Length: 221
Image 1: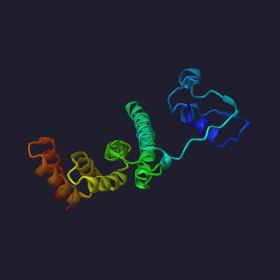
Image 2: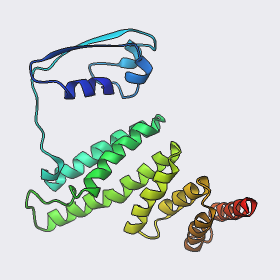
Image 3: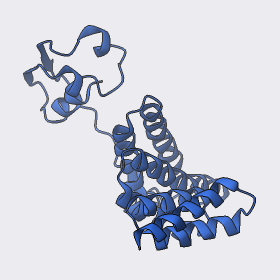
Image 4: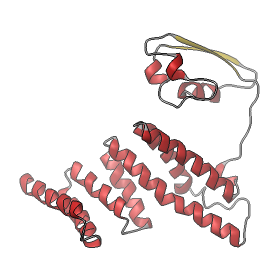
């Protein structure tokens, strides 16, 4: 569903009717995936004047994430992760990043570890381990998205969190070092690439990146 409609529906009250008109088809309607009831990509082209009349007949209230049992938390995170992955595959890195940031918020603010449902037992421990295991995956995917949109300072900040979880995380180290080069922090980039080369001495690409960072530092002096 187009994000414009999603925002509109979220602002509505039950039994209300709202009309909305836009001419910004590419910006407002072509940023999300088509749904079963509307394929906005074939229905509208940029420059069209599009008018929606929306009636809200009912509202389904869902539980807050922190209140969900762990299996439902896993399903919800996986569903959001799949959505982010779909955006990434079509090159919409900003949308993908936004979805991953939503997921990461559940981890950063303690919602994922809040056992509101008072679950216990061996199966709960197993499921909870799976849920927590998704954390580093989603954080890493967010790093890739942020690097794609050239938000290098964000990459450095997020990879710091990743390395707190797993200090030798190769993908986290790699994108951290690449971002450090992009912001001309060559000394830190050299240190990070050196760590990578120590961890994976046979990787020639890491060695090339290290040599490049060293040359850039020399050129800067």
